[in-house]
Amino acid sequence: MSNNPFPGLPLYDSAKFFNQISRSAVFPDQSPTVEEFVLGLNIKGAVDDYRYTKDFLTSYSKKSQDTYDKFRGDAERLLLWSWLIKRKSVVELRRRDLEEYTDFVAKPDSSWQADNTERRFLTVNGKREANDRWRPFRLTGAGKGRLNTKSWQGLFSNLSVYFNYLMAEDYASGNHIPIVKKNCPYLRHETGIKTAKRLSELQWEYLLNTAIAMADADSKHERTLFVIATLKSLKLRISELSERPNWLPIMAHYHRDHEGNWWYRTYGKGSKERDVSISNEYLQFLKRYREYRGLPPLPSKDSIEPVIESRVRNRGIGSRQIRNIVEQAFTESCDSLLKDGFEVEALELRAATTHWLRHTGASMEVAAGRELSHVQADLGHGSIRTTDELYVDSDNMERASSAKNQII
Image 1 (spheres, helix red, strand yellow):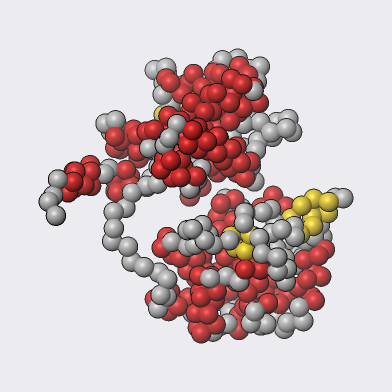
Image 2 (cartoon, helix red, strand yellow):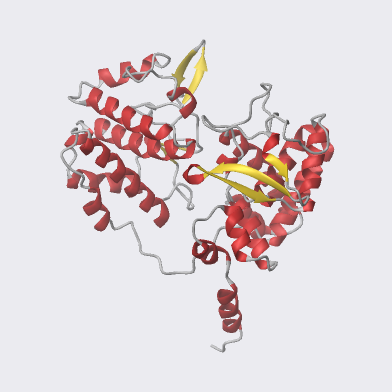
């Protein structure tokens, strides 16, 4: 992290605390420093900026935590930049300002960056205080923190939705984002091979064996093993396994049909429920985890326990906790790979994210010959074309194979 102090602070808390704010209130009572900061800016329109952005986020916070998080991040960064760098209201930004903002996003000031993702607020004496280690951006370098094409597209999409909302509320006079996007030098039109980021067979073998070894050595890591097996085998998004404002995964979501097949019901992207098919091998991990928790081997329709229980009884764990669990196992696996001489595989695994487990599960099933439409249904893809583009790479493998024997 830069030694230069960041002149701002986080503006909006996590969805859990954000949704506790009264709709009639502008600022959160539990975070008085936020109100002090905004009022202390002495910028005309800053309070209105904050209020309209709060209303915008309120309209999306009920949909899903992931949706709230992505809109909050992009709106919050733009507000802070508009106030602290341009010293004016967000609705006074014009095309040139927003083009300047994209330059800033591409290369943020060092004082705006942190080495790691930090919590925005911490609970201190019953109040939510801004975490002084938080920064709007992650430190760039060696590829970390830099936006790829998909990230730039997401940024422009989120900001366009934001300005359209402000226009609908008669607060903003226009939306310059589409023209800024069109001329953005950082947004590249990719025509290369489109494949999902996933673990190799070797990396997955090391990860699974590492998680098993961790659980055998210390029973607290039974949860680690179960999380990794679940995300990969059921091909879940992290939000589908974590507790969020409108969803708590419970053991009753595992259910058995009249033919003896097991399924897992989840609440996913687009506010859609779906049933994910379960393999016999995965049931062994479920039984092992339930045995560790002192539960019967398999759940019933009356099993109301959280799928992954937190330290607070009858509560689940959040997405951040799940990421921390997986990242610890990733780190242990990297060490094992390096010890055994697999340096390239270890370096690749260090760059992996939790979402790679979902891609790994789907890719391996497709490669093993499972019906593509069945994989599509488990993933919750609206179109089989999406599944095909991400996970069917036989043509590319043949193309790469045919190139290997070419003579220079």
